[in-house]
Length: 174
Image 1: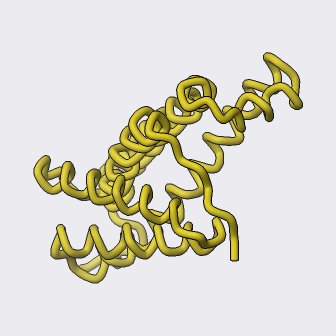
Image 2 (image 1 turned 180 degrees about the vertical axis):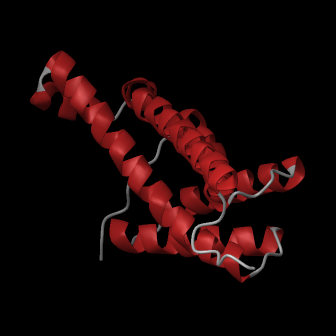
Image 3 (image 1 turned 180 degrees about the horizontal axis):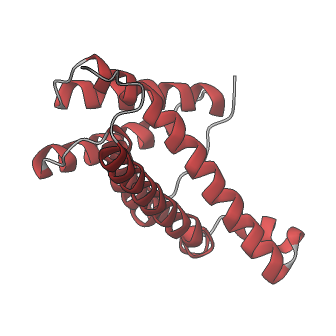
């Protein structure tokens, strides 16, 4: 069994809550679902509590991640009654978001390493002080948001091009 990851109240509020809202936004972006603000807020709060609860369980990080992915899919499916196409996107979206979060975390560590050196940056990220840890992990949340908005922009450009050029693979009728 894995170790329990210590999670301070400061980290829950300063990092966990914004990331839950960003994750819900990312799901909406990747599934191209129109945001219903009540459902969006409910989904964000449920994601926040689910992630907080899973991190306190004595399970390894990999199992934690898989359970989170399943939780996101189930929550979205319960809130938005969607068709098969939407369900497939909902299955793929959390995986893409997990990759985006990993990239954002790596970019944060790279930024801190460039500024302070790798050993110091590693110590900063793992500091036991809640607010200090929040401060040093804040760039990863900003990177996460920027990557989500870049994803939104890319999808929007792709949709605009698709609408302009027509559906790919659509047969020409006489």
